Length: 131
Length: 134
Image (tube, rainbow over all chains, first blue to last red; front, side, top):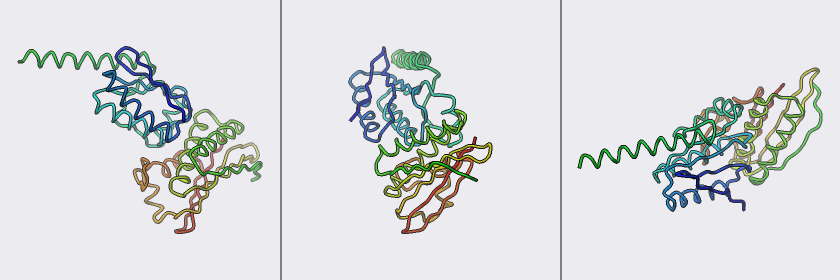
């Protein structure tokens, strides 16, 4: 079975989905990502879907599941690189992908994750100050 | 209406769903559909192929390349001999699901197609046909 590689870049994990996602590959990715988030303490997950020609409800559900698992493990998921035709189709399909942040490309996605880390950092400092 | 070139694709596992998607993509390209329309019909076909597999217990897709005067297009018919759908109106509503999907498959496929028809009989199976024209 193919496994999708997970790269660590700064505070984030980067996943590039290039193959047609099969059920078992999608499930393995969820599991691998969960483990890597815990092991690395990553605060964000970037999922690059620029190679995907379509996102159907199966792929949409996989992305939503990944974001849900990541959130429980204190990491934010940002989906990057969606093609315009895919966005148009998703809207018509009625798939809004709640809970998933998007950014135009990996660089902007990384900025979203860095901004979140900065925010959380400030919040922690605030708590420390109060003590 | 004259139609040419019918392809039959068996749907028995998730590899077959991917193959159907690729075949529809080729046909949509040949028909000269715009990129957005290609994406819509491939996505609709992907939803229905997965329904055929997950709910129909497998079946087949019949892919037709359409030519009608100056118009060209793609039609795909999905057939299974599964349990059938008891309430088609409910099944077409967004959010309706008996499986593990998001419940957007059938209604979503209708939304993404120019033509949509469904025939289903309990205990006999389900046939869904979609088409997209240039």
